[in-house]
Length: 155
Image (cartoon, rainbow, N blue to C red; front, side, top):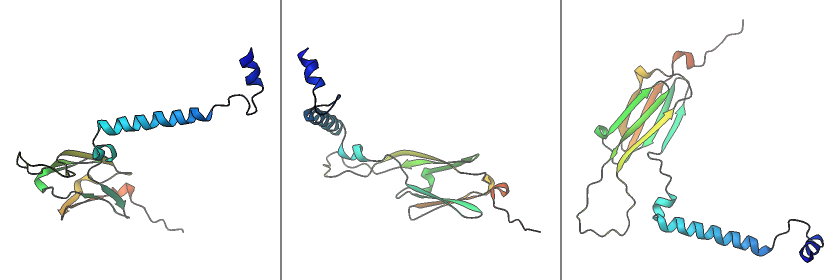
C-alpha cells in the first residue's frame, strides 16, 4: 500500500526509472563487449571478412568487376559465370615461416576465398574476359543485346 502511494505521487510519472538502472545497463553492455574482445583477437573482431575487395561498374555495353588480389597467381584463381552470377574463388598462399619465428604482428592471412556477384541484367557469358595485372583482377562482362539501352527515334 505504501509503495503504491509513492508510485502514484511520483513527480516523473509512471514508468520512471532510476538513473542508476541506465548505468547498470551500460555496465552490462561493456562486460559483453569485453568478453567478445577476449574471445577473439583484435584483428578478428574488427575485420570485415570480405576478400577480395571489389568494385562493380558498368557502361553502355559492359559490366566491369575489379578486385584487389595482391600476391595471387593466375593459376590460383577460378572464375565462373552462371546465368547472371559471377563467381571468383581461389587461394592465397603465403610461404610458411620457420617454426622458431616469433611474430610481432601478423596481418597477412592465407587460405581459400570465394565471392559471388549477381549482375543486375542479362549478360553474354560467352564473351567474358579477365586479366590479372599487378594484383588487380579486371573482368569485363558484356551485356546481352536485350539488356543494352536502345535509342528510339521519335517519328
